[in-house]
Length: 146
Image (cartoon, rainbow, N blue to C red; front, side):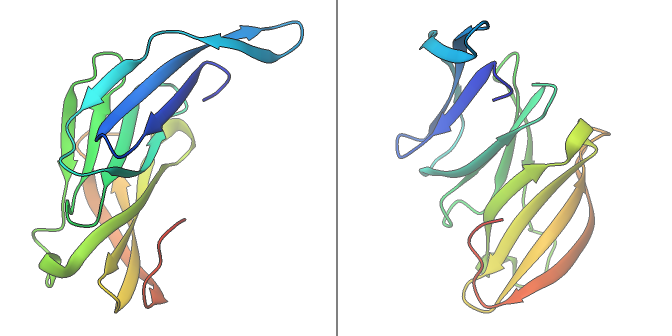
């Protein structure tokens, strides 16, 4: 990511941040270092994003997990867990995608209510508290990706 790191996550429920070795003259990857590991998910990882400044990593497990996790990139510490527990029908809502805005002012998440409707939620990422600012319906039916 940003010619410095490659972020991966998969069925083993672990996020790995690989430091890329880059030949700056040729602008090609020549290798990867040992990865940083982020272990907090209880299900396979489906989607993730990292802030442009490499401070935070957002990740989403499979639909059964029903949460978006925020990790501090430098330490790997879990710093926030986003859920929809305060929302009506939250038992049926699953996170599908996450993406930080430039300069990490916002985090956008894609949430689907089983096969009924899909929503995008805008979270206040700048404050670090991730308050839910707004949720808007974007699709009738299931939407899986941004």
